[in-house]
Length: 416
View (tube, rainbow, N blue to C red):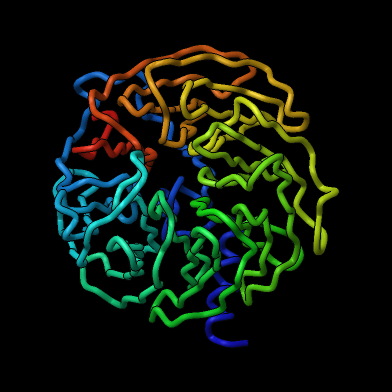
């Protein structure tokens, strides 16, 4: 076995046992541990008072990159207001002090009104932080150590989309995985985390730009599968060599819809959402497993009142989501898709994905109003907190603290 294979095997063994020591209490990728959006922290306040705002740090420039936390550091990305530069910023997770900021060249960037020139969320492994930068045309993948020293950089080529990029890298053992789902072309790329050397890559069936972040589906026999979702379908790959194991082709009534919200796994089913600006929606629940085309594995689907950008959540046989424009919170039975309740939260649209903290769901709308309610079979609004700043980035949780990235500031909320 190669050294890379040994590293991957050791990582996956630790993952299956749930003992990834480097990231045990951290939030090291988009939507936290394996992309679930779930935090086990017990002491984060539900109703926020002035005393709960532990720090409020002004972040230079503009960006919708979500914060990640690793080893007492918050990492996030931004872009200068004149678009001439792109930033990777490191903030002390306890004090809010900006420890360092690294710059790569930028340029004019055309994006959707709800996107930015710095919407990609970085990922970290306890030693290095990996970030995707877009100069308005070309993409660049960088790796820095936690002191801000550049370890390597790898050009990814051009990215074409009327919306601009927004994909986020993940770590699978010693490998960085990047989805390049742009208009008309899709490719799954891997790189050695230590050196940046390209690994295996796979061309995917595709049509429209997507931004869904992959996750690992744990198995008991041959190790986990890498699950990737885009307009080309939901696909399982062997993370060791990129071999495709199975694929579920999404069935659209019209043209293929984009996948912006990420797929999640709960009680043996994968839940994936898609949509577009015209209001068309498709959400599916499928059973993973098998070989080749698994069209027969559809459990249920929905084409109305489902999310496009925000990622769903799941707990105890229930699936929860909030819709983009109406800010409608919905709860369904995971096995049947039958709706148990819906509640119009109000206050404007939603771009940030909700998260689950100690059994409660936190969702924050674009105006900065955070709603908190139990992940339960009936709805009860526990708190409505006003941040008083616009929010498009998804919140993060680590070590008993909640981190929210607004348009101008990074907020840390917790108990003193």
